[in-house]
Image (cartoon, rainbow, N blue to C red):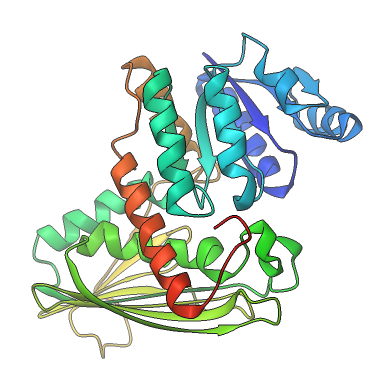
Length: 329
């Protein structure tokens, strides 16, 4: 059993708490050990409501607890770099919520420190760890849709009014919060041999992106078209079109069903494949961390450090093209 602590006590931290409770009830692989907030009362309330053994009114106090084995960082993107460095300096393994950092420079600094200190760190981009990833790749490899040629993915939620989305100082915008999923979907299933990238974005008054459109052109002639927006809901679908049919994924953010079509024009799928039943979907990234710690590894194969840095560099390039700057860039 591994003692898991959560740094930050917001809404995403509560989803991880739900996940950990489910894992503890299922196989006792984790202990809901501690939570920390800058507000001691908030930490106490969170611990009581979510079933954690300890609550700390500062991040430093929690990280000084030698019983902490894995820390889930659940603070805004803008603070991930600082908070991961704190964890690493205390020798605590880290599972950090996406986007890993605010920019690639911060990601490289964090991962260099983790390597120097011998501390396991990984990015919690949950779709990288889910069984749906393997299922999609196996279907493509089987020739179920012929030769894959075009990929599309979109993700949108009406969250533009949220402080963490609107403010540049919190590394706001649609790209780091939502576009990171569409970019990762393309990377997972089409790879990274991109020879050209075209994009455009509509900016909010604060200077961060409200919507963005990204097209990736691959060396072998394939293409990926990606959309993300914080202004409205989208259908969140992903489609991989091949020479003999297509494969549709119902939700880029949390796939539940993979549908195969012999023809993209067909109204009904020839086959529908549900993903395995899950607690929340976060359990797969926690399980990967446990395996890495048991094996003495400093990264998870599902999301290697090189991939984290690559995606951060792509997002840096996109923001530069759009004129989206953060104060810490």
